[in-house]
Length: 597
Image (cartoon, rainbow, N blue to C red; front, side, top):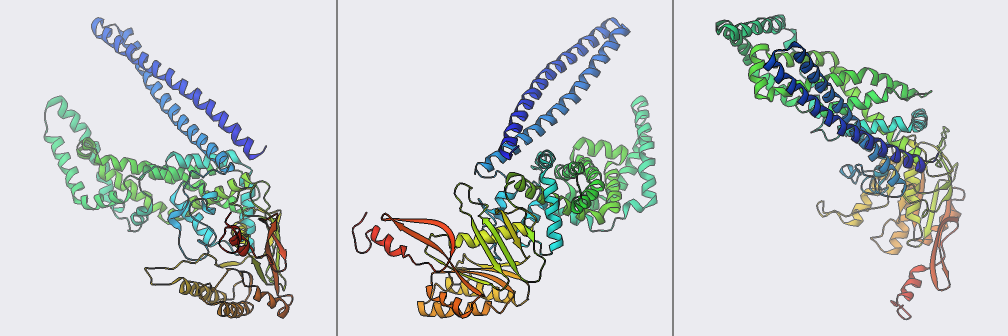
């Protein structure tokens, strides 16, 4: 079954299931009303006639009413989950039809550092936007990190690749992970303040007298309160309430501060717990990555779920009735803070690890969804030889719709380390540089790539493609470009293997200076452990192929002038570009020599 037909089938299935649940909710509401009315009527006649059988029937009707309330709550939860699953499948089908992903596009992570801007990693219709299935802040942050700093160790890449392959074959489980994340995605705030809550040492729960008081005072106060209601004697309960408030007041400042750090976290904690609990049911196969994550999830989901409940209970202190009544009789604030301190003492060393696990699960889920949607993409082969190497067959850009993109073959390394790519504007040079860069990012994260074959050595990616000036930093375009080139050289001096993607440098100087500067920069690059694609309009640089035979090669994207029209086939071919489309277009537009079209 194709991804397209799978999503269509799920949309039909979930639409029908939602309709069925809505019908049950309507029937349940009618039965609740009926049982409540019956209970009230039977209670009325019981008090009127004092018939014990009427009391039993009234209690039975009220019990049915309560059970129907619980049933209605379960139906509502099921309906909400089904609606999220319907949304997920509608979104996936839209993505396959080249519509925008409804989840976050990652624009908040956009920056001018590294290759993120050059390769369209963040923003609308970016790589992040295409991949993102993350519902938590940790998931989005970890995905953003991996897309900017992918794995470089071949063993890690292979292990991630195996995890993606196993997880992509379980679309129902993957969608449940996303659905349970979306159920609570509207929760207020994030979990960053919990890190601060976890830091201080906990002391209250270690005080033996306080542990004794938390049990003794409620056991004393509650009977005294009942005695007061029966006799009107307030002395005993007043003494117990005063003791309870004195103890609570002693630690009121500490309790208030702790509540500020952990308040309103129930929803977001339930979101994380739901993702972990669902992941426990995933089949791991032989994937060590999935097995390790599942082991973490097994111990984490119940603990985080418990913290969600404790956070919810603690939030009830804001309720005036709870604050006055339960604090007076049962030291409610102290009960909550002591329970939270016990949780903290037991789990604080694992909490950050659990959050990272959630982020990792969501990243793998995102990459696996991408793999499922593009089953025709190839899983790359990691070349573990020390010599840098990249080879791709029928490689295209994953962000360009299949009907519009043109695939190319490509090979570099094993001596041939710098490719000079010439061609006119709009011919495809820059797109090809981005195509290789984006596919390498996917490959080093264990994802399939938009190619039929892809073999590569893990490398750092260094780029100078899209350079901007800066009014704030008083930096001209030319100086901004020079700084980018300087950064590339500094990174190469670390001797780490790299892929360098350069697009038309030194546009801010005269042609002679540009040619000389470009030539010297190319010769500088040859001194380092890198493969370079150097796109340029400067045909004079093509002579370097003769000077560095077998090391530098000329390739081009050619424009085709046929029947007085300009066409591009976007095919990479050996050699140097020859056609001059600028002159042709200027004539066609009447700018030079000829009539306006």
